[in-house]
Amino acid sequence: MAIRKILLPLTGTAAGEAALTVALMTARLWNAHVTALHVRVDSRDVAPLAGEGLSGAMIEEMMSATEKESGSRASAVRLMFERFVAQHEVTVTEARAGAGAATASFATVTGREEDIVAQHARLADLTVVPHPDSGEDVSSSDALHAVLFDSGRPVLIAPQVAPATIGRRVCLGWNGTAESTAAVLAALPWMQKAEAVRILSSDDYQRRGPGARDLAEYLALHGIRADQMMFKPENRDVGAGMLAATREFGADLLAMGAYSHSRLRQLILGGVTRHVLERATIPVLMCR
Image (cartoon, rainbow, N blue to C red; front, side, top):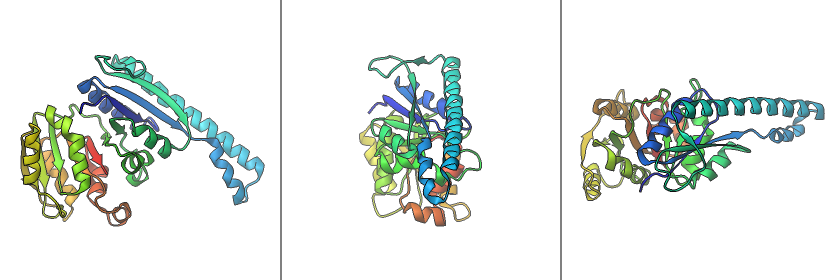
């Protein structure tokens, strides 16, 4: 299935330009439309704090400060978007069929980011999420987890630094789970365009389910020739071993399932998903 609509939630400017670059590179592969979405914080969400012993005047002051900060952030994000599309000569228009080129639009909505992003993502072929800001805990990325857990659609996590290419050499992290199966389905259009595809598997990563050889046979039915590699954990870390294998292949896209174990377990004990989210330097296509 071709990619026609890409959602790009932009919460700030720190990692926004790299994500815009990834979204535009993807859009140009399929002549798709990029909807850049900024969700402003609703200052009324501060009101429930009145029950925490704060006076009405204090609440009003906090709401005013929240509104001012939210407005400044929204203006900065929009300015970044406008500069980017002008620099890259992208036509700004509403999404329409048969445009024949990559196009983009910008929208600002007020509300709860995780709810709004998940709802918009349900009618997007792909959501590109900026990498969390430097020093920010990956697990706190509301937009990322909203798409993963509440949209039923794939998410593409942009690296901190924009890549030179995307989708030419694709790696699949495979462990036989339903999550990795969803990632394979989302990656099919990428693999059909790719110059080379490699399936990455490991005895330490595999769960109950089909193996890498079964996947290679399945992909062949879709006209995709994929080689296979068994990788080893690095310092007993499966995620580190997987990323090392992508570097060895020269991959510019990694597709994998997310949170085959529960998210809580991964937050407490760590896991492959968490390691990849924090350490990947190439775009990562994830599905849950």
